[in-house]
Length: 179
Image (cartoon, rainbow, N blue to C red; front, side, top):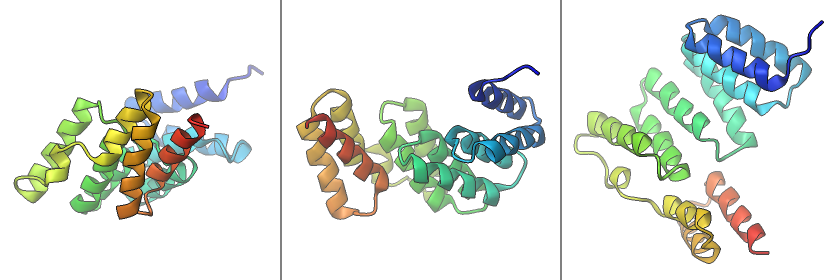
């Protein structure tokens, strides 16, 4: 029997989603997860397959599971935004897209998508959808090696929003990198 790597198996499942066969992808990812119940990528692909198959509640549960292991997973934030749109909660969708932009501030397509969603559901959009947030600025500083400035931005965000696990994770990484 030929052995297939987990990466290849997940890529196969992702290809099935893209080709309109999410139920086959669900079967593959569940098979992987029976053997490797901590394989985070499989949960992400499973969530995408569930969303594509029309089950946003189950997809949301899997995206949240991924975020519990990796609070900085942009794909899961975008997926949660899509699940909230599918279930008729655009405010939560906007919130999750804003977190995705915070995680990937240089992604102009993602920023545009956020602006369009905010415009469609809230009129002129909210100021934070067009401005760079402090969390995004902290990530820009961190990626530029300006760890002290990044830590300052992350601490300011956590002072106002102490439950932001993505920012807690980013601050911990910056502090770790600075020793």
